[in-house]
Length: 144
Image 1 (cartoon, helix red, strand yellow):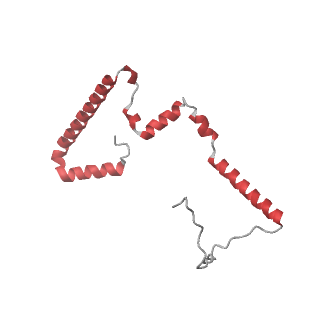
Image 2: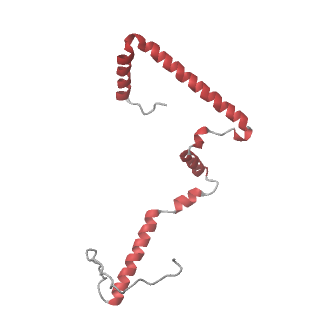
Image 3: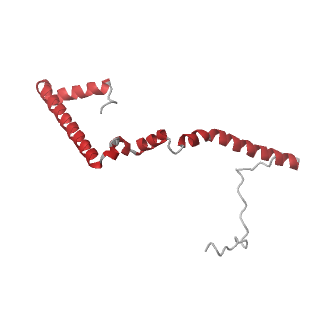
């Protein structure tokens, strides 16, 4: 439950407990808190047990942690009844992107070699020319 509490946080809680409750009442407060946590856990376990009994024998391996979407997906991927590991392992995004980049660069080089000149560079700083006042874009009747 408190797996991510380190030594500094624990010491801070102890110092705050001593300051707030005092050294005389602190052991009684700790006992009350642990008793309350124990009762909550018992209530939770009882509720889980009742739900499992009501669901029936086909849900005997049901875990409430599986209701978390991340855990559910991870469990389904590990189950691999659908062959998802093959798909996941067979698809390498970096390799696919390298192939596409290589193909684009090779077509650029072949087109520049065919034209006999260097590939045209686009000046990103240059602004496009404004259209003439009587130059209207084409009318598309399907778009309206």
